[in-house]
Length: 244
Ligand SMILES: [Zn+2]
Image 1 (cartoon, rainbow, N blue to C red):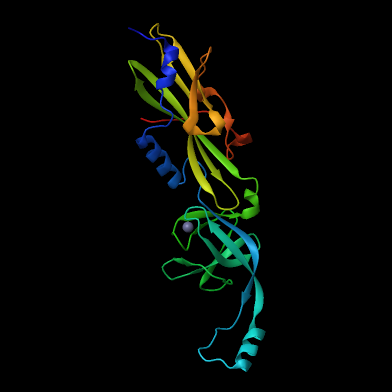
Image 2: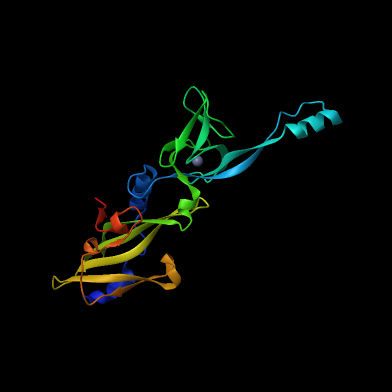
């Protein structure tokens, strides 16, 4: 016996298949679809001093105290590995010490033959995880950034074919948080009379695990509806990807 199309609501998945998740996260890792990894920085006063000797008498300590000086450095956070590190600071950027093989090292640095300045928007390699990331002033992330992309997936539910639409949402903030969630968005099915039917997702308590699918009176193509994404023109984006 055939069921009413609305009864399918309880059978629709609330998360995409693992393969889709892997694909999308791989895209993000390759810095293609949804923003890029960041090295956030802000200026910070750094105390520098001569090296401490193995044997030091009180006078040595006094001299050591006097040798301390303060310089402007950069406190950095890599959004890929989450590590904090110190680098040199220049106006609008950071200075990283580099080895002959191009490897970067953390620590206070000044411009010289063994170091390179990376300005806002340029790509540097994180000295901890070696990921290429965009050097970005931390204050630019004060309000956070949300990148979104709609992702379609075809699934079979009972004897129906459904197209599930997931909003892939990447959130970055000034603390270096970088998370991606798959938010249920909508679903389309063709019912037994050949009519296109739509469900919209309702998140109880804003929790994706408590998603409820609500049958809608009208069908619209989710790929034609504008949605927010930070990097898009006017922050408005239309369309998305479909898992092949
Ligand atoms: Zn890193």
